[in-house]
Amino acid sequence: MNFKKRLLGMMYSGGKDSTYSLGKLLEQGFDASCLITIISENQESYMLHTQAIEMTKLSSEALDIPIVFGYTKGKKEEELEDIKQTILEAKQKFGIQAIGTGAIASDYQKTRIESIGAACELLVVSPLWGIDQKRYMSRLISDKYKFILTSVSCEGLDRNWLGRELTMLDIENLDKLSSKFGFNIAFEGGEAETLVLDCPLFKRKMIRITHSQINWNGYFGSLSIQTAVLASKRER
Image (cartoon, rainbow, N blue to C red; front, side):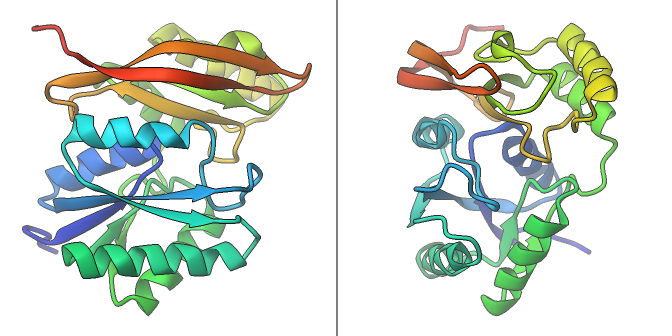
């Protein structure tokens, strides 16, 4: 199917999956009209990325793509209507014809977005669906995606993972830990959340965190970002 010039609204969290998926869809010929970000009051949302979600404003500027924000209390299933209304707002404002998602293996998220897409008469595309997850994590590093973990919530990941930019060696360690403790190496089960600080899609500026704090309760934790700025990228 030829997707050239099809206007895309990207469901966007600022994390690795939505950012990498955006890049793949641009390669396929989509025209990214806007990002769509839903901010949930419920930190335990089944559908939505929540940690450091406010950083998407900077991501939008770095990508040079406008962003549409939606808000929800995050109640299970009820949040789907809030997502739908935000997508309809993006459709009306930007004329989008398709919705992009960063879904990899979560049927729960993918089927619900597809249902919303059908109701809004929009194509739903998930370019990472079914990808080999270890290879994908390694590809992120080799493709120069610089990202950190902003939350961890599973056995095998401690506070030392928070806020650290991941390297290829980290991916190898994650592979070993995921095998030992049984978590998903790409964090599709919510084991961790990520934030992309820089990538090839960021043409002129990258995100620089200037002040942050680790919150840890002994079993899981998060990186609270107090301040962050866009910084000019060094010439390569």
